[in-house]
Image (cartoon, rainbow, N blue to C red):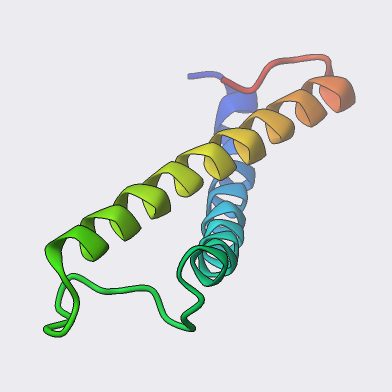
Length: 88
């Protein structure tokens, strides 16, 4: 692994954390639109149905994957523009 890739690691970690926070906000807003409720169901919510819990988990996973990929790709493109090298 070259020095550039090692130097990019902290940037990648920061982008990953930011994407997690952004995905959480996006999921909460999406859930409010879908269900009209404030809180999405948690796997341990006794009063929620399996269907509700699994749908919420699938939506959450999809949003997280899309946001994470978008943020990581944007970071890589920005890094290439600044340095001329692809970080991956």
